[in-house]
Image 1 (spheres, one colour):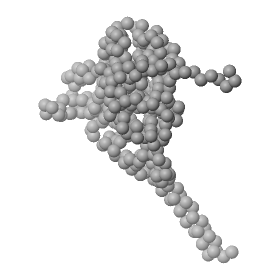
Image 2 (cartoon, rainbow, N blue to C red):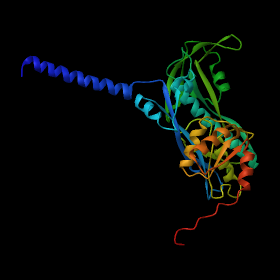
Image 3 (cartoon, one colour):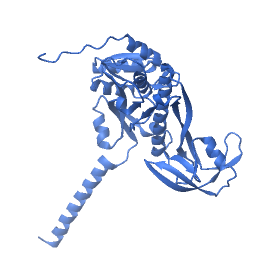
Image 4 (cartoon, one colour):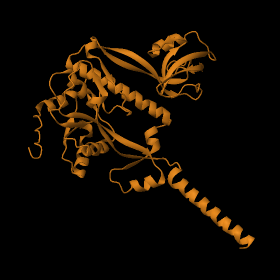
Length: 352
């Protein structure tokens, strides 16, 4: 084989491997601005909720439903075109100008808030006396000039060894400070307690136009609902799920444990919907995917916010589910419906 032919063969193989690498990058790794939404899970919430001295007996279960969202590549985008349960959306429609870290921090905050609202609504309906107290402050968004030692999702625990529980405490601790001053913050990030030196920056108050010093971040205070008696204390395990849409189902699980009897009556009860302290149920996104997720888990009943009912009913008909769809506007609507249900008959075992 001549030297020229050898070089030609090497060049051929080099171009071949380069073409394969480029094709793999385009199909799998090249970022594209789309998300694929699909049915997620229907998970029992009882293992997520602990009610002190509550009645844990439940012949059925309450299930929260979720939507799966994944960043698309070219291959997934093409495959989703043949999946009737997949929905393609522009990534910007989800982030709405936020970074991915800021979006994730917001979803965790909304989940924390929905759990607090669920506890409050359940206490209110069960006649349990309670009070609302600030629990912690979380970083939601960074301004362009903010110190990058803080990140979205950080929980601020202390500044200069003084505890922080709400905005007012933080503002008080920053009084008399100047732009350029550096303060020591203790914070919780991804389950780890860290110490960070944060430099204060000048901030213009959007309401008054006056300047003050601050961290250059948007903050939110997470509140905690505490019963007057510790006998009714409630805690949540980590759900690894964000957003506010499990509020109704959390409330029903808590109320079921706080009160005598078994609301589930042997049924697999899925559902979705936000909840507020007065028990009002709000609309959510992704209802069509949650209907599919609940059907796949064998749910008997699906509690759906009234505003989402038509879309839910259309999807239920399209997939031919036998689930009973129940539109609700309030927690009381859900309680009245469950109270009206007869206990689910137990099917005899084969051969019995």
